[in-house]
Image 1: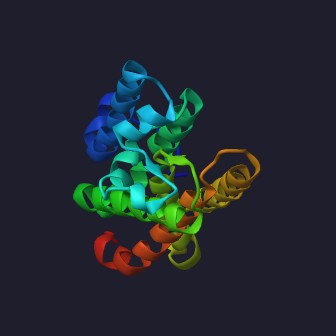
Image 2: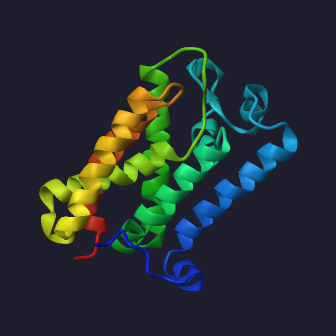
Image 3: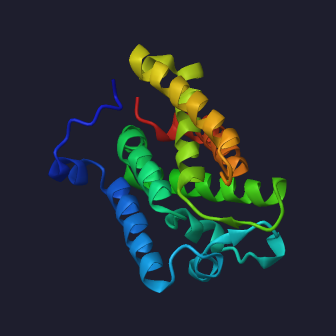
Length: 199
């Protein structure tokens, strides 16, 4: 089971430096949110949230929003996903390529949310990038089964099923960003994975 974390914190930081940085940035920006006005729409927008109307979005917002969160549960849920599920992909891709994959998946997921689910709303959170990771795992489960043991494949299917149900059932969840990130990760891994991933 590749999703069980056996490492000590020191080992984790050494083996997965990019993921450690991503987790730290989310935590730091959450502290900034708390110190500058909390989770109000105005404060989130000032710090980098994107909105449903693309005419109000500078390009950097699709990137910056990946490190902002709208509540304590939102942050904890996403950091748990990053901590547990991202390390194997950093190992598969290597540090730099993993960082690029994560950021591009997240940005594409956020773009999909704006163009497919317009309206008056604010978008923040790492989940579009995290679903990009799930998209890569889905591709591996379907077409590179030798990379994952049966328990890990079952975990991927379970996480995807429960996560997508949760996305549609719970109010104020950016399900279009989740779907966009999932599709982006799946396609990006299809296009780049065979060249980037070690055997």
